[in-house]
Amino acid sequence: MKKYIYPIILLLSTATITNAQEKIFDGKTLKGWKRVAGMADYKVEDGQIVGTTVLNSGNTFLVTEKEYGDFILELDAKIESPLSNSGVQTRSHYNPAGHDGKGLVYGRQFEIDPSERKWTGGIYDEGRRDWLYPLDLNAKAKDAFKVGEFNHIRIECIGHEMKTWVNGIPTADVVDTIDAKGFIGLQVHAVSDEKQAGKKVYFKNFNLQTTNLKPKPFPKDVYVINLQPNSLTPAEKAAGWKLLYDGKTNTGWRGATLKGFPDHGWEYNNGVMHVLPSAGKEESGGGDIVTNDNYSAFDLSFEFKLTPGANSGVKYFVTLSEVTKGSAIGLEYQVLDDKLHPDAKLGRDGDRTLASLYDLIKANKQERFVHPIGAWNIGRIIVYPNNHVEHYLNGVKVLEYERGSQAFKDLVAISKYTIWKNFGEAPQGHLLLQDHGNEVFFRSIKVKPL
Image (cartoon, rainbow, N blue to C red; front, side, top):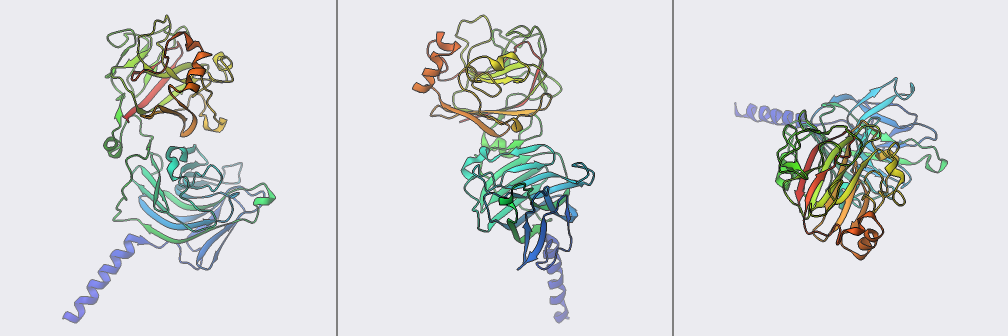
């Protein structure tokens, strides 16, 4: 009897391994894959999938015929030119009628970007929402990818979370409730320049796990894009983040000139902190609101949604000691409809536009990274213990400065703030949401003391 027991055990063990590691590329053919949405060429060469760019083709994808939900995917990828671009689609979909009948692939993509900005490992929402995790959010990972060499990629899609690694270096972390399952795909990017035609991208050593998934540890200091409103992941909590707005109450906030929360002009239920429209002037409704607590060095993240022509702001180092008839004084991350509000044309060289340090430093931003009026944008302010400050808009760093430096003092001297001594240099202060008399929405306001 014993001689039959061992083969049975071996078969069971093999079945378990096969179930845990699914073979999606046989190393010889493209069986189980199909090309969609473009004319770029895909072939199998020396055990590798090789994609080649074609002039005037749109983005072309080689996608799995099967859909996947939770998985861990590892593979090696090489791109031969810094002029090229590629990516790996996860839980994605295809609309044959999209893109004017040329076909549209949409879904989250592991970006392969060998350009000067070095955003490989960032997360892009192909055909839909654009960038979700530009690698400005994790700048120390920008040099992980090497052009002209095979690079090891790891992608975890477990539950609502997608995490990425490049050559063992953690790169991006996005929590997103859209797309519970979809296909896996490889991209050859569109090219319109003859210099980019005929360039190749290589993929090999695929390892896909769909069961018995064990997430790899991720560093606490890597910022998380959490698209579940007013929530924190266990990892965010462990890293020291706390919500400043729970989506239901005004806990932790009060009027800037009041002992309690304003009794009019603000709503704070239904998941949004809502500035109601009034006269379109500072303090014309319920007035500014501030945190009960003071902050010195911190990482502040918030989502905001503008209505047409709206003006507001998020201020920091607000001491409430300055004498003013209007809004409380502090360093301000400008929240503005640049196209319709006249303030965008005032000040100096655009220093009153969206995401700018109001009246001091202009935000250097591209239009593609500004979400339209009526859509949610993500703002972020980091004040380091050494007084280095950074502003971000939708994951892209748009300005930085040294608080209290001579360069900072020189800017204050030619601004509206020159009448206040040592403006912006307080060791700590409140955080503030501004009532400028226009309808604006805030949510997912979270802070991490540094």
